[in-house]
Amino acid sequence: MTVDRYTYIKCWYGIPRADYEAMLVAHKGKCAACGEGETALSAKGDVRWLCVDHCHKTGRVRGLLCDRCNNILGRAKDSVDVLQDLIEYLEKNAVAASSPSVQDLTELKGARLCLAV
Image (cartoon, rainbow, N blue to C red; front, side, top):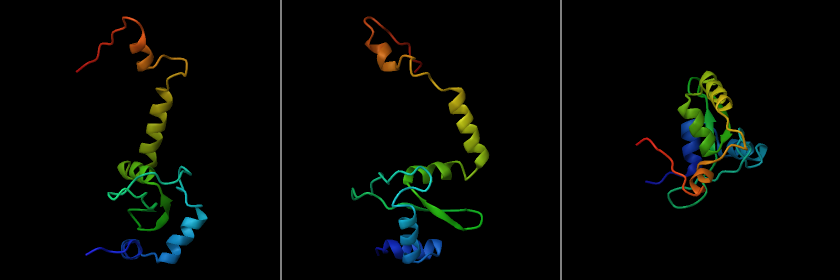
């Protein structure tokens, strides 16, 4: 049995079609976190709907997110501390734009890269 997307959203998150569509309009069809449109594809090859983001503790709907942002929050278990730690890690390990990339290094004549296997 195939369930209509709006029926699924109503049953799972408790919000009617009108509320989902109002959030979609409020977000201008974009992710509330990154501001990008959805790019993930469904199994049929269609662009997916924005995900209904909700607090896993309270069930309160927070907004609509793209698949990428929704997965990031889910994997971080909605932990601000985990996300801040990841930001600090990225900032600490940022590579300067002038640093050579792996491709630059491999294109050097006679260059060899030692990779741990």
